[in-house]
Image (cartoon, rainbow, N blue to C red; front, side):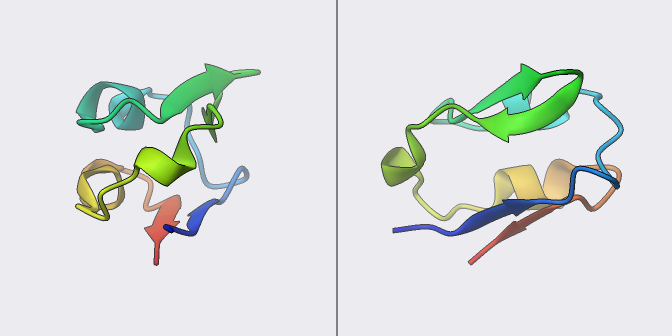
Length: 60
């Protein structure tokens, strides 16, 4: 199972993670990135991590 960390202070609320995740595990919550509870669906592709312009997402 993936461990997805979102640095809420670093997140700029752009939504790139929402649009880039191939399995749709992100949503915007209070203008910040959040996971939607489907973290078990994560394939560890790290597209969210590499596409985040603020470097606010870490996937391990």
